Length: 244
Length: 112
Ligand code: SF4
Ligand code: SF4
Ligand code: FES
View 1 (cartoon, rainbow over the protein chains, first blue to last red):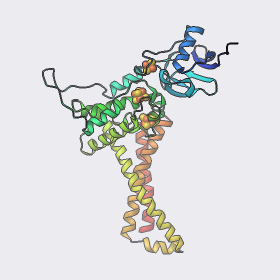
View 2 (cartoon, each protein chain N blue to C red):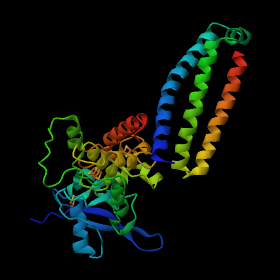
View 3 (spheres, rainbow over the protein chains, first blue to last red):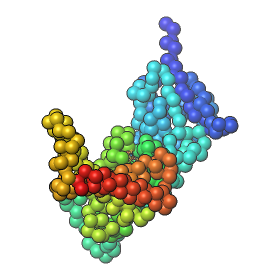
View 4 (cartoon, chains in turn cyan, yellow):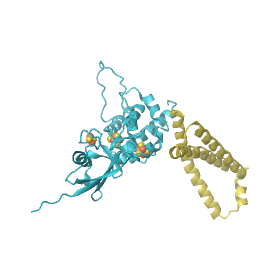
């Protein structure tokens, strides 16, 4: 009996170089069961073109390094099945939007993470190692807000999906603001007023249009939109009290 | 502009939006009632002239527009035209003042 010919995927992959800064190049990749988009990219790099640059680490949806634009939408590629996103047998894979391309599918994430720092994304301790552990009851409202927003893996999918990031280069973006929101609800943190000032205004939470592109696309099903709305309430209250 | 001023602008825009929502409803309802009732322009002026309630209502309406519109246009100009900074802020302040002046002139014409 003749072996069944493997079904082929036609994959357009963004390649840097040339006058336009890059172009799509098409590769034929055998289709497999339970194949992820990252599997496809890896196959191309191993079997067809070792010069293809892309980024990944964990392959299980934890590290946040593998995000790319797949058929026009930002996605984590290691947990995205080809079967779910391929149009017929076609896939288009490009680097994340809203960040400068280093090469091929690799973007420079510096602006993304610098904005976490600008949004006061660092925990500021109020206790020393000689103090006892702080007890935070899991069912307090503040702790629940933190729980809902804490599982961010820093993949940049939300950042690449946000129009305001594209329109306003200073905008801190959904992930950084979401991070700030978790810290504003952390009773152990000692930097609430300064962080609130850092996330207010036209580069911060007030620039958000609340249209939730970030929330629709976040692979961890977080809602940066909700976190940003929380920051708006928090800053408004502080402004009315004259504390901002 | 400082984060504090920007937060206040945002608050002012939300608050003026709430006022506008109410004012627009009252304004539209009044117009429909007046037209359906077959009132002439002269009859309408007869009711608005010297009426402090209508004067106050439309003065508040105009103030809300003069606050709400320039803040929104400022945001649109910054996002779509990349026009931001002190010059832009000064311009939108002038737009707000002009809207207020034109609006108040119109209110004066029907209540004085
Ligand atoms: S909800 Fe806000 S942060 Fe999220 S994509 Fe829209 S503008 Fe960006
Ligand atoms: S909020 Fe979601 S989409 Fe944004 S960086 Fe975190 S995990 Fe990724
Ligand atoms: S490779 Fe780590 S999240 Fe995809």
